Amino acid sequence: MRSIGSGVLHTRPASLCVDDLGIYFDASRPSRLEEIINDEEGLSAPELLKEAGVVASLIRSGRLTKYYDPDPYIERLRQSLQVKKTILVIGQVEDDASLLKGKASVASNYDLVKLARKENPNARVLFRPHPDYWSGIRKQIGKERGYKDLCHVVPPSVSLYELFSVSDHVYTITSLSGFEALIYGLKVTTLGAPFYSNWGGLTDDRVKLRRRNKGRSIEQLVAAAYLQYPVYIHPKSRRKCSFFDIAGYFIVEALKDNDYFSLSGNRLYCETLSFDKYLGLSFDLLARIERSDNYASLNEDDVKDLNESKLIFSEYPHLSHLLIKSANYDLLRLVTGCCLDNILSDVKSSALVDFRELSEFFYALSIALRNSNGRVLGGKIPNVIPYVEGKAVRGDNYFDFLKHYITCLSLNIQYDILGHAVKRLEQSLREYEGLELYLDSNRLEEQIRKIGRLNPSPDWLLQVSSIIRQGGPSRSERNHQKRQEILVMLLGCLKSALSNRYISFSDAYLNGMLTAIGAGDFESLKLSITNLLALFEIAGDTSDKGLSFNERSSLFVILSQRKKSIGGVS
Image (cartoon, rainbow, N blue to C red):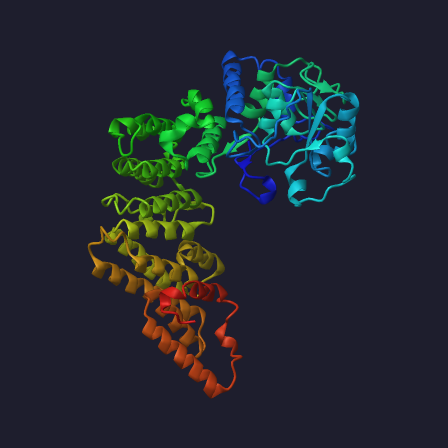
């Protein structure tokens, strides 16, 4: 299971195959997956086979695929009144590595369709092209005309499982969809050597591999391909996780925007409900909300087990979304507080800080705060800055994390910690300005590593100043003066960063304009514009290289996007 959405769209993968022998789609040599399947002892444990049976059942019930369709049960196929044997031909990208390395015995999708028609002259033949061809992302290789004389061409908008439900037999070269059809219970003919072929008659194999000569069950192939071979990475926390964690994430993602109290009529929900103990906290919470049959009706006992969970980092975006949509704001406070306690514990005890993970969490928290109808968390967000500075880091997302963290503090009206974060920025800028350039290179590198992470760019400071200026929830705001003091402090950082980076005489006016934007000071903005235009008139030349327009294009993009908020000044 790779992603919701196609890989060609550069969607982040939820699973990876790391192979030290070969790779699963290269039939010219053994792969680690092939070795796992060949290992009789490794695939004979009763607990593993039982788990693989659950995986196969969940794949069928949740209609899980490599590229998951978030509306998997919608019916788009026009059913024929005439009952016929139906052959499904699954197309592939013809220059894809899985065909080039898969010992294909046919040269193209067209040849595959011709063979299926020749061997089944009286059947209905359905051909589903690869989605990349249909969308035009890839150019079809081989014959582009003539399909209509051989088959019905089905668009990729029709899900594979809908096609499986009306098909008797699948033809493919090496497609993973052939394995999904096998799990579904269909007869599968392979015209290449995919990893699931040549295992004792499970598939009709037109290409033979002598090194695969052992009989295997569907459960054994599922155990190898879904439980033992891939590495699963949670899309939110980016931590290693399990097949069931990803399955739960995909299914909740598909269900989260439905009417929770009408889910009894949703087929995906009904078909997967019996797997609730496997699908994680978010699916379990969704089921509890659906059973509660009313908004804001859950109590603390309904989520007491969340306090014990170590997956709450990755589950929080879904948990908070479900609780807000069902108006369970008291439980949102409880769950958020539990997660924040876990975060503080982690950053205190760990020698390695993952800013990508922290950034994802605080982004989700900022969304929750914006959508919780002004119900702030009552000072629960801890001060994590002292515990993340000076530690080894994973990822380069420090400023993403800090922006979302400051956003959360601003929305939650925690001015003491917000002020501390801004003061630390102010201090870091002074430290950065005071670097002693005569230091030997080793000491200089050490100094840069120490404080360079806290050297914010002007455009970042401009974004954050705008966040703070917007204020917290109006129904909860208690100290406008304190917020203004913090904003003034941050604008000092912005002015200092601009002055350090852009130092010519005319730059001073542009720096003034950008500082005025951050402050929302429209009169000062107009004055800076007037002074700059006057300078151009006096100089008679607007080509001053000191203006550095190209370097600061992102800053002026921000200006243009906020035209309305700055009184129409353009």
